[in-house]
Image (tube, rainbow, N blue to C red):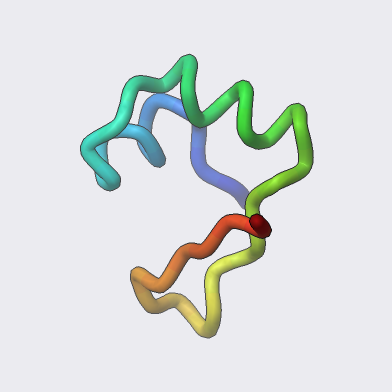
Length: 42
C-alpha cells in the first residue's frame, strides 16, 4: 500500500501539493528498496 501525498511531503520536507503535482506529471522515480533515495528525471 502506498503513502499519501501528505505523508510523503512531510517526510521530504515539501508541501503535499508539490508532491501531488510531481506525481501527476510523472517526473518522480520510484524509491529503491525502501531507502530514502528519491530522484526526479531531468
